Length: 414
Image (cartoon, rainbow, N blue to C red; front, side, top):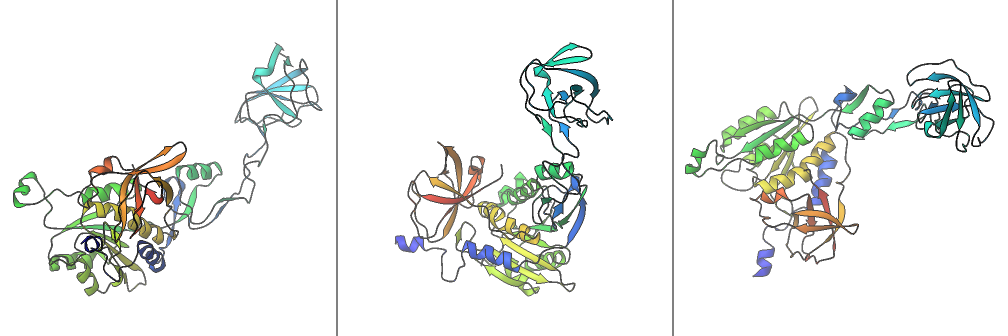
């Protein structure tokens, strides 16, 4: 009896999670590129390498507030210098120091010719308005930022395929980059199927439920700094056909929830195939989300529309967004690397299942070791444990995992 239960949902012919992800990466056609202002390109993927046209720093400059000095070698304590001027950051100066001279200088200001070292102001004693004294020994070339020490003209700043994070944008801005060539972001339509979705509390009397999938998906895309359009469609073949046909002409990706299994009102797959889409895969040996569906339509202009059909249960939708929707969006933008799985130690046993499972877990460090702990309420219609979960953990098919064993996981957004 136990063997019959454990094999449920793992019939012959199902592909694995990794096979499904490989198919997504292999079959997807990368989108065209566009040129954007750098301040509009957060989270976008570069379509070309970027090289520096300038040195950083642009000129040799002071690393501290202090005094630029000219001396032949190491400066011993109590050595005095003639103070001949002041240079502020952002102000040009024609000053040129000779041996025994000093100039007041501020952080980031251009080092005058003849400077051999800089003394921070904490080790300088002011004798009078025209003379200073160094109170500690000071080596040559102290606190000088050399021209080009961080980046030289021609250095690679960023590589094609790199995602533009906040830090990347800041770094490129400092190097004077104002526009970037990036892959276009996919135009995405989200289709929520199901007559069971309630529009008001009064609908509960008719057996309807509140919709979690549309808010979940919209928030997920907002976290990626992207906008999507959301459509609701009735569970009729005519309504589904009309909507998918219209959307397939204008969008790069149609993301659907529900209607991909074998029920009497599951129209997404048959309608999609009737409209000329080619099935790439249907059903994956996983839990939750086995009846996931992926298909492609080649349009007359040689562009493609992709349809990713997720099951309707909210936990399956959430897992599908983190694993599969991410893979599709990345592949469309030229990113065809596997997910960045982490490794962690299980803190408890996990029973065997015929399918690979994605469990919502809590990950934390214990004496520098990353450990994961499963949360209760893992059923596919439940989402409440997402209040505590910060990762999805892969439990291999057909294996009982024991406390202390290593598992793979994926961190999920807050």
